[in-house]
Every structure is written in structure tokens, then in C-alpha cells.
Length: 436
Image (tube, rainbow, N blue to C red):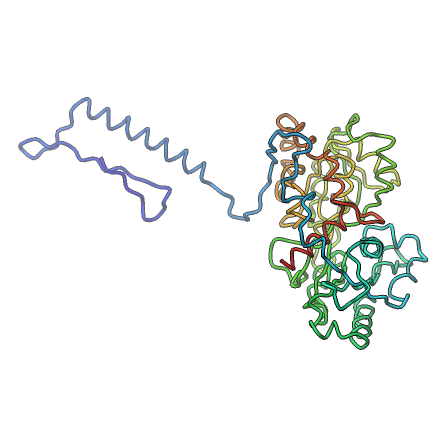
């Protein structure tokens, strides 16, 4: 018997049998051989049919739903030696010079209290922490990096209250002109050792709509610099064509601690799945784009009547108290792939369900994302209930154990002073590694 692979399709096979021949040249098939042939044909057909099913992959995309399979381990063992508590030797000697710019670039904006507390406020938090940090140097001649403290996210719209960043390019450009005319350090390196913060939807492209952000691109004067930005994806994108570090959006550690003082992270969780936010029944076509790529609309359509899915479209100031009661928290994309819900969920012990194809997460070498979160492909939102039921029935306690490690929350929160393992600390580690 010989088995051949078809040239037309590698999953198709055929069998050629060499039959016995009699002396007179006629085919002679013994009774037992005839039945053996049919049994063999049936077995091989069944095998190759099952193989073809097992090897099938959707042709649409390589993105897939990832269900975490965390190892059971002690809480203190979630992070490897290379994670948050490993302080590189170079961090002890790291020196960052902070430009003392005129107040119009930063402190003037703090007259609005929202400036230091909204989701883009990492630009303020990082500046505040670095000012009091041990890595700060007042001698620019010995600095490894130069920090540009410019707040571009505090110009809140009078129409909808959202940050308006149309002025960002002009403000940044004038700051670069100022320091390059008064100091030699920008021109010496062409800005390659200068650090900016771009905590907006599409980072250093400085626009909230992706098509316009791509069209505008990264300002030419910033292309050699290092950008700390909340935007990050695993595929090529013009808005990350710059040396960058993906950072978490700002979530107030005081608010988190206030909620946890009332409801401990290991307390009762009576909400199976939680989401509160914008979900359009009929999403509008905005310049050829639909909000959330219609993912949130599909979630609402599919699960609005499911009693285990706590879905709310209206705003509620106390929503953090709902997160701390929840087992799973949806973190779907909006206009951009990232969301403050990711940090809020982790800080309050709710397993984040990330629905944003290709997203690059903050501090991926330090935070064990695959062991504390669930990633669902955008195309699989219709299977969400089945996926969550599976996780709840198999490895829920192991994921929660890893998620509730205090070091996980610490790595994604900014504080007034740099704390070991916190978000600003992680940024300094990432910067120091660029020197190695």
C-alpha cells in the first residue's frame, strides 16, 4: 500500500492498492483481502477528515482569543526576577534633567483641578514625581535624559468638557525652540535623549481621530526623541514611528484606596460581568469610522437582556464601587485601543477582559498580563458568554490570586513620589535599559 499527498490540496490524500494477480493476468482478490481493503480505506478516510478539521484556521485574521492558563503559585511569586522588583544596576546611577520651563507650559494649567486628575493626567503625575525623585539632577552636563514638562491635555473644551489638543503641536514646538536656543543639549543629540509625554488617544500624533492623527503624523521635531505614550499596537502604525514607551493612563490612587477601604479586594463579588460606558445602538459614521468598530454595539445587542451581564450606558460617579464588586470587567476599544478601564479593573481586582485587537499593553516585561487578564478577539464578542463561563469554571481562582498581588496594582498607578515598582518607577527602569 502507498499513501500519496494530492498536489492540489495537501489535506487531500488517496490510496493506491496493488492487487494480486493470478497466473493468467486476471485480478484475483481474496475474500479477506477485499474486506481488509475496505476497512483500511474507511479508517484512512476518517483519519484525514479529522485531521483536516483540526488544522482548519479562519482565513480572516491571525488575531485570536487568548484564555489565560496561569500556573498555581504563591502570591509573592507572580513576578519573575526580571519583573517589577528587579532594580537594574544602572537605575541607581540614572540622571534625569528637568527643564524649568515658563509656567505657560505647565503650572498655569493646574488652575483647573481636572488637569491633574483626568485620564490623560500622567503628563502631570510623571513631572511631579520626577521633581522629587533621586534620579533628578540639576547639572545638565551629567544627565542621561532630559525631561520636557509640557501639559498639553488640560485645555478642556467648553462644549463637551473633553480635552482639546489642537494647540499641542504649537505649544511643544515653541518649547523646543526655547530650550534649543538657550541650551546646547537638544542640538547636541538632535533631541534623541529628550523625553516627552503624549498621553492622548493616538499618542504623539496629537489627535483623537485615527484617520486625522495618521494624516498629521508625529511632529517632525519629535521624531528622534523618546515619547511616553498610552497608545501602542503590535502592528505598524504611523503614530508609534518614534522611540516610545507604552505607559498606563492615569487613575487616581487616592480614589482607588478610598474604594478599597470600604470594599476589600478579596471581598464579595456579586456582579459576573461589568461594563459602564458609551454603547451606541446605531453608531454614527464619522469620517468613514464607527466608534469602537461597532464592538460595543454588538455587545449591547447580544447581551443587553442577559441578567449576568451588568451593562450600563449612563454615567455614574460611583462606578468604581461597581468594579470592585465584579468578577470580570469589559475593556473594549473606543476610538483608540487603550482605556482607563484597564487600570481601574486591575487596581480594584476585577479581571480585565480586553477587546482591542493588536493592543500593546503597558510595561509588558514587568506585568504578567497573560496571567491576570483575558484577551478576546473583536470577532469573538458573540462567544463572550461561553468564554467567560469556561474561565469561571476552570482557572478563575488562579487568575484572581495573581491579579490580587499588590505589586500588579502598584505597577500601573502613579504617585506623588516615585515608589518602588510604581508606574513612574517602571518608566525609569525602561529608560535605564535604553542605556545598556
